[in-house]
Length: 136
Image (cartoon, rainbow, N blue to C red; front, side, top):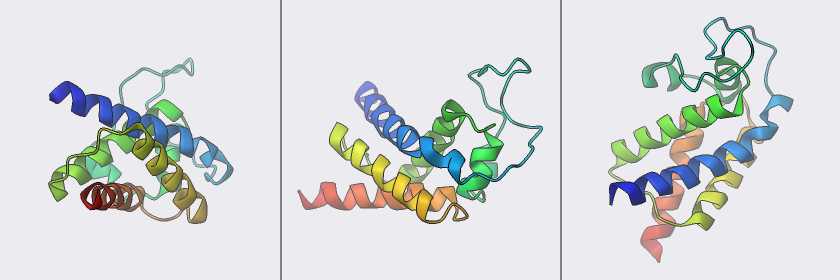
C-alpha cells in the first residue's frame, strides 16, 4: 500500500512540476543564497528548506528559493502536497489522469496569480481531487 501511495505521489508531483515549468515567465529576478544548487549549477538532489519555510512562500518566491530549478520546485510541491493530504486526512487517488489534471490546474492558477501562496495552490488541488474522488 505504501508503494502504491508513493507512485501516486510521484505522478501528482511530476504532473505539477511539468505544468509549472512555464513559471520562469512570471518569476521575479531574486537572488537567493540559500538555493539548493551546487556551485557548478547541477542539482544536488537535496534541499535546504523546511516545510515551515515553504508554507508562507508565494509561487514566485518558491520558484526563486529553489534556484529556479524544476527538480527543486518538484520537491517543494511534493512536500506541500504531503502536508495538505496529511492535514486534511486525504488519501490521494491512484490515477494518472487525476495527477495530470491537478498539474494543469496548478499551472493555470500559478499563471493567474504568481504572488499567491504556493501552499494554497497545492492545497486547493488536493481538495479538488479529493472531492472528485469522493463523487465517483
